[in-house]
Image (cartoon, one colour):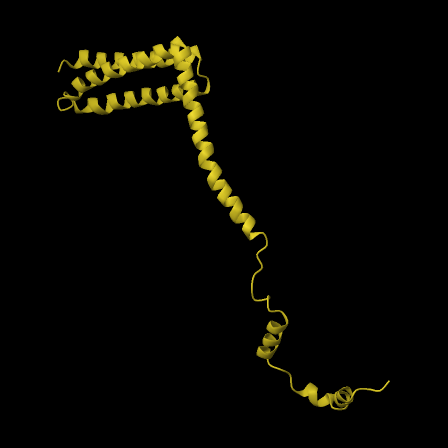
Length: 171
């Protein structure tokens, strides 16, 4: 086989080629020309991530809305069917009106008895926290008679608290 003239020239003058090495910049240019995509990040399945995010953003509000509506429907059905729930709502309205009226009378005496405000508000807040806990329990089990009775009893405690305070202060 005959050797190519270029190959022969390179073999004869190899020592001259080995003396000078190309700069790093030259190698970078060569590398970029050989691999034009190496400077860019490849995004695999990028469109799938976007589609998943859009789907999630579309489904999440609909799910929340559905769950809130179904919870409200369950409560409405319970009110219509269960007389105890209806009784609870009537008692709630009655006691709320009575307690707020008597509390307004007590608030007039806050100037005379300033320490009274923190004591009454603390007790009422404690009863309110208990009531919210009972209300949460009622949502989980709508027809639970014990919870309904405890909620009505809580309202009675509030009423008794404000009545006792009014009797004691004679303002």
